Amino acid sequence: MTQAYRIVDWKRRYEIKADKRDATEDTPPEKLRKRPHDFIKWKVFGHRLGHKYRTMVQKAWKPGEINELAVLGFFGKLLELAGDQEDQKYRGWILDEDQQPMTMQQIAELLDIHEAGRLTEAMGILIDLNWVEKCQFLFSIDQMSCEIVDNLLPLQKLQGAAKIASLSCNPFLDETETEEKKNLNERASGASLDFSDSASPYSGHLKIKEARCNALKQVLERLRIRPDNPSDITTFRDIFDQIEHRIVIGELTTEIYDRVIDEAKDAAGYRFKKTARFVNAMKREPFGYVPEHRKVPGSRYR
Image (cartoon, rainbow, N blue to C red):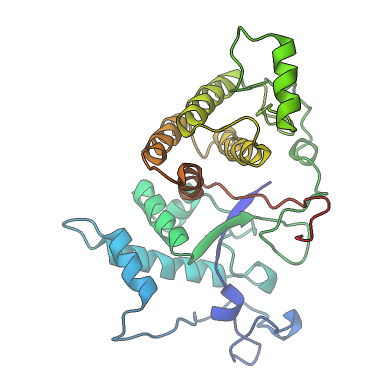
């Protein structure tokens, strides 16, 4: 699915009604401003330095620079982009003039910023601060959401692409293992260990698949992920599916896998919560992992 950046709590913090009063989460769409914002409502803290501001300064600090204020200014410009939409249902999202999600490269070009890499770093800080989030952009329904819609058409149907046979990548098996041992491992895990993206039309790109498989094996080995943990299996498959998709559409190159491996090495250096540290690192740019919320049969959590 297509992903897009959006401002956290846009409606509550920045949206206004038709009468220019502050909107709330309960304000119905028909009472919101009908045109793009002329001004952005940005709370004044003045001489008080809030916790999030101090955290931003710590994260953004670079010796010999004022990168902290660059990050803050970038956020202000994102607020302008998020408010510059005629239709209120799109406000809060970082979209182009055709209401389509913008990549970091497109955002940099629009803002006439030549250092796109530095802008990507700034976006990562804003995501860490929970000022910006990256969500699935569901443009087939009125209410935009971060939730995954289970019954959306697969990507290859949306694009009219033919289904391409997937290249299997099972990091828990080596070439000498027999089919019988493979079946035993799969039965023990209670879940498929095929990390290939069976729903992706890009699985025929062997070079990308090979790079993916090599990186995945190294990551799982360093983090000591067990094949009998279906939850971890699903999470890592989702992470690598999303990275692969961004490589195919040109947002990333296969060199990103080297950085993924580096993050796994770093997380493996800690005594506790190795997997959690790695997953959190994957949520930051340039990786951009967005957890997929799945319904669990029989669970009271939906």
